[in-house]
Length: 638
Image (cartoon, rainbow, N blue to C red; front, top):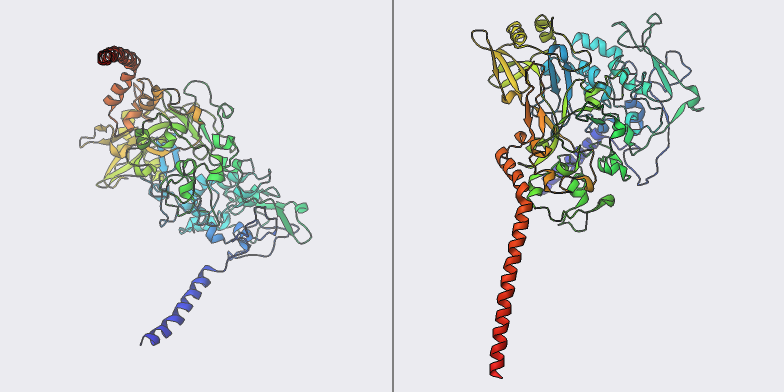
């Protein structure tokens, strides 16, 4: 019986393995490395997408109405595109992917409506999905795709009639491999005709990767083409439609193009999406030349020395407990790189020349209550958190950026706070964060507050704010409580339950009499925070390097720096909180009393040393007397 069962199961097992292999497909040429650290030459043919979404004929630059090349079909000749497209930079729309610790959201803002909303397709607490505010994947990509490397939401198939028509013209925003891996200086991500403009201004999703590379030029705009325009059978009367011109000199006799692809992504490619500009905390404008480089990069490391990935592009984020599944995740955290695993079979600390810290004289409680970044990362905490610009939130690196230091969205940093599991830290640990105060119009239900659709809000409340004066440069208007009340009345028919407004940590709603009610420090209006890790300062510039009062002083920013409560609602006295207010396990009274104790510690040390000296003299005196007594006894015995 067993033999008969085995005879049946073995063929089934073989067939199932073969089926899985057929499903996965055999590895392509570029899927598996042979171990060489040399950069492979990419002299390759370019392929477009045809009207059926499949690979078209090899691109000939001499042809009329030539199409843009498709990275999915061109790079996919040697690299499994589906594997790459499942990587961290592209998989936010996949609900099966662990969200990991909170990260930087996409910040939608509208000063005229008093909106500042953290959006994300990942299930980060405190963020909202684009669908909740009425943004389709196409609309979301148009707004934020300027700082996306393609894929993910950019390839979601439209389902509504208008969206389907638009997507047919614009195409999908495929993973732009060249955005990271093209080492040519002509790779244009933020120029006037570069990737960002192609995506957000022109809706040229299909053409964006081609327009950004150095051997092609794209003119025209899918946004300006008619909704009936067919890019695969272009109508010459459509003068505004996208057109491609290739540099014919870049093609060899076989129609191949030499693309300067590198495996290790250059730092400046990462910086296009991951730059920060911290305010000065004064009237002086912040400038990038005034900021020092992260110590790791200054020492010669690159971003991808720590943030590594393989074919699947499951890039390491670098925090402890990261659920990436990447085998090197544990060794590329601060602790893993500098200290290593003490229980390992071999020494792992000091990777890549990292100094092994000893932290002489620092009480061990600091390593339980603080992350490494609390002392070593971000700007030195001053008397207040400063307005901070990020590439993704403020369109850094793209044309016509508003350079006003007060420009929305308002991101504050550093905020020394307990993030807990949401920030990838142990419970009670303090870490530096960036922070935004959400502001939006919502519907209050038993499950909490959900934002209302943006288009519905604009139609309903624009009358209430028609007389509001907008700031000349940037920043919030000054909504009055009366205007907030009028807007909530206008939204009564839009909100299914109860219309509310969230701003500056406060929940606004109308009571039964139609009067405005404010609930300060409402949990539904809490700020959204995400941990910052860069730029890392050298050990000589870390907190505590001089003395304990770097943190434990009544004027030290670590506990007592102020954090502005950002809001578009006018206030006679701007509201602020202290850093310690975001440190749940720390009592503000205890923090202040402990800091005051350092004022008297020098005197206490003098007193203690004096007391020790007196005690020493007394002991010496009695010791001498004892020695004299012993000597006398010995003399009498003799």
